[in-house]
Amino acid sequence: MDVACFEAPAPGGPKPQYSGQPDGRRTPEPMVNAPWPVVVLSLGILALYAIQARLPFLVDLYAFSPGQLVRGEYAGLVTSQFLHGGWPHALMNAAFILAFGAPVSRFFGPRLAGAVGFFLFYLLCGVLAAVGFAAMHWGQEAAMVGASGAASGLMGAAARLIGGRGEVGPMFSQAVTGMGLAWIVVNVIMAFTGGMLLPGAGEAGVAWEAHLAGFAAGVVLIQPLGWLARR
Image (cartoon, rainbow, N blue to C red):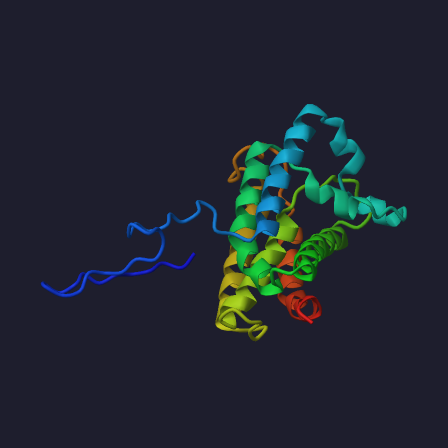
């Protein structure tokens, strides 16, 4: 969100002019200044978890496990992105998407093609994040749920946009390498501590491999998919 700074007028000087309402009062800023696709995605995660909390068997039906790929089952690559391990997990991912999804959605643009491109980008990052997890646990039946991989893709894309000042910057810009190294450190810590540092995770493990694969996918895919959506 842009922040406007106002200097105090010199004594006897002109009064500051404010845009907004006719009586000179400023129009209040919206509480959430994010593009609608990002808001829909964040609220959708919370709404879907509210349903999941009442129907816990959905996890057994729609979670992802690496063993599914061995059996030729691929639906879990997508459906698992809309399931979560608890309210803290869902809230954290919704906030993550709200923070890093806003610049990415603005880059894709306000047109319908931009919104569709943003959603496809998000889903594809999540799919590749799950594939990255499966590559490290091939054939195992450990279930994985959550939007963290897709949200990490938004983080990687946002890093490239920061490096390019709103456009796609170099793949190894200071923003990308800095955020990438920080994300690696965080996930290495989570790899050794499991869910102890995450509220509500309990004894569940953390799919740190999906986080790093999602980040890499976002860094790479923002340029070609953004170009297609903005044509």
